[in-house]
Image (cartoon, rainbow, N blue to C red; front, top):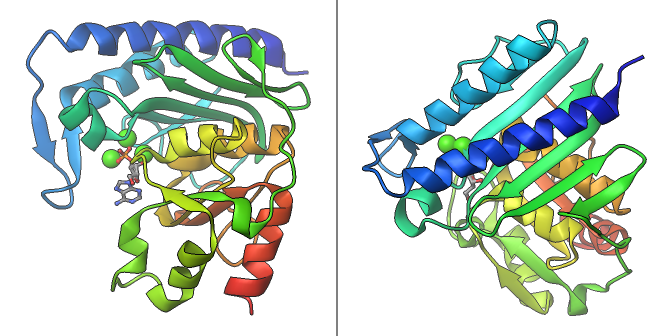
Length: 263
Ligand code: 2AM
Ligand code: CA
Ligand code: CA
Ligand code: CA
């Protein structure tokens, strides 16, 4: 039997320690590089923090595997065993430009089932965390179950790029949703947006392009407060694949998928 409580305690200590390292780094000069294009940034801190987690995990749990955005973990193509899915800094552009609105995101899965979700808002020292079956918390405060919300009363997290011409989705599909909801917000960190859904600050978060490390923790948090997570078509997410993502309050989620996507 896996001792999830023990893993959870260790993971929280490491996340807070990593957060301290990031806060300390604000004093020093960042080294910034481009990845796939000039808007796709990575810094020395993204890499250092991922390597920090890999060292901790391998020292303590040598049989666990690690999937990290920056590629220092393992090559993973099956969900067997325990896998830590890590985004060392989610919202790197915010980290570079704003020194806020970014998070450390860690989801821990066993045989494809999510057990632990941690999203740490480093600057605000707010740790959103969930343990399968035990509920979700922000620091020590338990997050209440989500309350039913209609489309007209909902706030949706969405990047405006999805209502412009783009290769991933017909924007005429998305624009009516944006027009119908009470309001939209875009924070630039998928993990934080998922945490905000779990905390009831957003009623949903919709995006056409995410990777496993962006949503691995968020799925667990949202589900622990009764929310629903799927791809844009309402289909189950594959935890090892990039895809579209839609997480939110159950009634809101169902209504959007039925009336606007699969109409
Ligand atoms: P990152 O900062 O870890 O790269 C910004 O809207 C959000 O999308 C962030 O969570 C960002 O994560 C993520 N993101 C940025 N580029 C992406 C890409 N090419 N594919 C998927 N997600 C991306
Ligand atoms: Ca990135
Ligand atoms: Ca990310
Ligand atoms: Ca990242």
